[in-house]
Length: 312
Image (cartoon, rainbow, N blue to C red; front, side, top):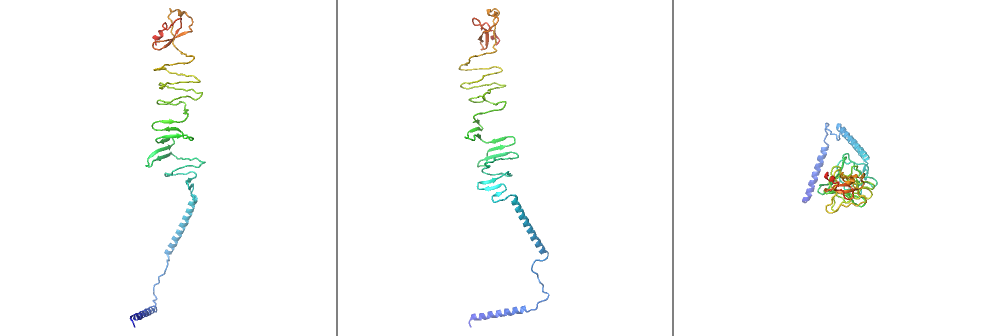
């Protein structure tokens, strides 16, 4: 017999011996005091486990009920929640909305049939910033005033975009066809006013008045004052100067009247002094330019009644 056959016989012997030993072990008498170990959870552990399972079940039911209640109250839908709707064009809010934190959007507009209202308990401020985050413009609507801080402020017409009002650091421009001041005190200017034309409303008087100082009108090519359908009246407290440095002062009217001029008188020896009533007078001029009236005679009587010039 070869070597492989011997190995098989040895394996059979070892298997037989193991079978005999196992059989003999099972036939041994069992001891009566053998200790038994039960399998499972009993006693207070089992009661605690059932309690925690019940508590977990109640918590899940409460959470589910709260979730359903929140969804119902907040009006959650597929498109959004409450007054908030998410559309292809952006976010749509219906009704009154409050924002407790800053809101960053690109554009805000209302529906075509409703106005856009921005309301605050204190003020509404709109800021504009550049790409560096620096403040370039600000509009504040408060309880006492509306303030705008910017380099240039413009108000344009809705039809053609024409500038109606503009203001910057250098000048203020009013582009409206008519500037109307309805205050009872009129318009008050602290410094000079430059304009090519000043006129009043139809059937209204035009008054240029300086209560405590002088009123000066200057122009390099002349000042024209015209009252087409009324009177022109210049009143002052002290002196009225009409001055022409190179030309002349031309008064063109049918009647030129100089009222309240002083009247000179002849000496008692003059033959004209016996006249009971004098109706014709001669206009005389003193060397200083003062005008006075002298009773007319056959010749000039200005020299005879020149005593007015002594008191001027």
